[in-house]
Length: 256
Image (spheres, rainbow, N blue to C red):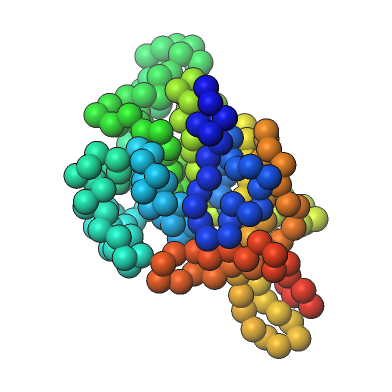
């Protein structure tokens, strides 16, 4: 396999400048942050760029309906319907409760927890993606409420499926407060950090001397490549995200 095909560049303005090369193909990457921090916008911007590069992308929503997602994408001066007609984009909404019930039925039928097959439970059989976006793990986890071990089993199988088929994935996870910044954090049934190859943390920022709010992101983890270990500014524009890789946060600020 050529070097070019093993490295993924998201094409988000300024973001690729955080890496020596890019994100290794086949990586499972968590995109985590608080409410309104820009997680979905990050993924939608990446989605459009990757589709333009010719990658087949599947956007799996467990929250917003397909028409609303298409409306968001249209706001980036792109017509998602044209990409769907070309067969390089599929947007599909799933019911997390249906996933949880299906997993429970498969486990009961198999009698052995590791025999479940995620293919009929989650990935559409009529589309073979290169890249999958999941929005969000938090919604799936909530559907497994009271059955955390089933969620862990399912996620282990899901990650194995992605790895086996060399599918790159970006999985959104909402967190109540910034993690990886020295605060104590327990995953509460979402023990997926150790399974992931990368973590991109997205923050709301509050500059305490002026009261001004902003946005920032950080590549916390990415196996198989070198990257800049720093928190940098970004903004959301009509064209999507713009990351300023050379603009580290300065002055008194608080991550929220």
